[in-house]
Amino acid sequence: MTLSVTAGTAETSASSRNSKPTVGLIGVGKLGTAVGRLLEAAGYPLLAWSRSDSAERNLALSVMLPTAQMASREEILRADYLILAVPGPAAMNLDLSGYDGVIIDATNAWEPTDGDSPAGVNTRAFAQANPDLRVVKTFNHTAYTELTADARPAHVPGRRALGVAGDNEAARHAVARIVDDAGFDPVEMTLPQGHILEPDGPVFGNRFERADLQALVDASTARG
Ligand SMILES: NC(=O)c1ccc[n+]([C@@H]2O[C@H](COP(=O)([O-])OP(=O)(O)OC[C@H]3O[C@@H](n4cnc5c(N)ncnc54)[C@H](OP(=O)(O)O)[C@@H]3O)[C@@H](O)[C@H]2O)c1
Image (tube, rainbow, N blue to C red; front, side, top):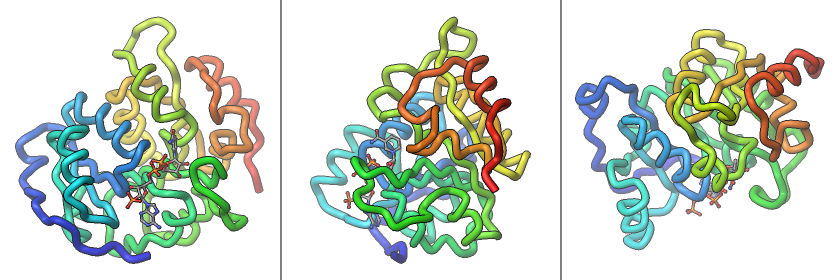
């Protein structure tokens, strides 16, 4: 799949009006809009890209994410972060050549949301296929309804933890800050350790606080 131009109304000055970096949503379905709402509430300027451009979709988006600006491919590639929120197999086919920000991969290869996926669809394969991109996996292992229901300010007792997996330490720390701003305690791990976040892993669909998730990370054996 190649990104194509949709309604191009992005203002590239968005991040200069706000101290937060700009986040681009690739896909504005259930997960993309749920994460977008959390980040919008935290003050992040949002851009959004969708393969389809219909009046109904744009109206729905203007209600769900009132500050998000629809962006063309060229515009969204200027975002500081890009959240992949399309089905896992579709994410593998995205052409993000030339992008120099950080990719936040929230996708899975999980039959109920992603349909039949060929073997080998996962964040590590995406990163290996795109060696020039900095890729961090998070937001993938929690239902979109729980993301919006469970977000809490920092230091609230019982705050839910989310795994943040990536091999580029600076990118991973930066995404951890975004996860914290979204309302969750980030628990960092390498991309191989991130297999625990995938649909066949122990974290997927389960609720953990920071210490328990950190214990799982510590106990995990990196996949070869
Ligand atoms: N739903 C959850 O609770 C949840 C939680 C965590 C992670 N995730 C993961 O997030 C990803 C998206 O799930 P979702 O629930 O948000 O799905 P969704 O509601 O069906 O939304 C999917 C989005 O991807 C777009 N899309 C679909 N096929 C595409 C393609 N071939 N090329 C480009 N764009 C395409 C859709 O565009 P159109 O509107 O044009 O169809 C839509 O914007 C999945 O990998 C899923 O596993 C989901």
